[in-house]
Amino acid sequence: MKWAYSIQQKFKAAALLAIVFVLVLVSNLSGRYQMHKLSDSFASVYEDRLVVESYIYKLSEHLYQKKMMLDNCSAYSQADINQQIDVHNQEINQLLHSFEKTMLTEEEADCLLDFKATIAVLEDLEHEHFILISS
Image 1 (cartoon, rainbow, N blue to C red):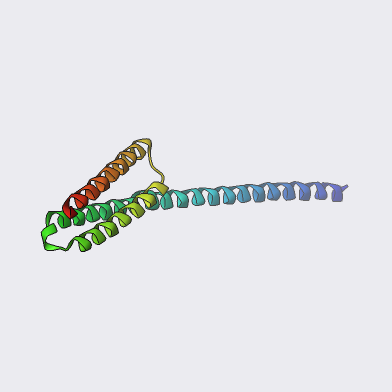
Image 2: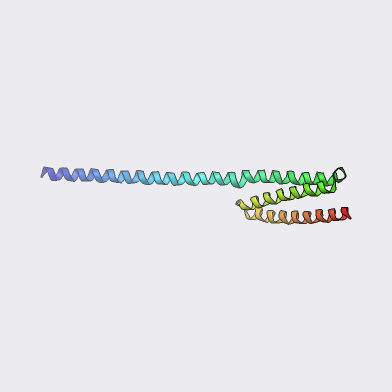
């Protein structure tokens, strides 16, 4: 009878160890999930905020360079101006395309659409300006 009591105690100890093992395993998996989620959050902040900041800076730089070229058109030949403006316009369009791929709030998306419309109007005005100059 003593051996039956011993087996019952061993079974209880094994069951308690199994429960502890399962709890540790669940805790470990939960921790991994939380770390993965945190990592994704940091990546999102980097990609959707810090990288976007550099896009905005580059956009403003290209717009400023275009403004300087148009303000000083007499210093450049017509072909040089057209070529440089086209290069800046291509860079601006690439940056806007990259900007669209990021996660934007509704307000940011609306502002981006307005900005793209403004850029399109500016490109049309530049084109008309060059047609008038070349005439």
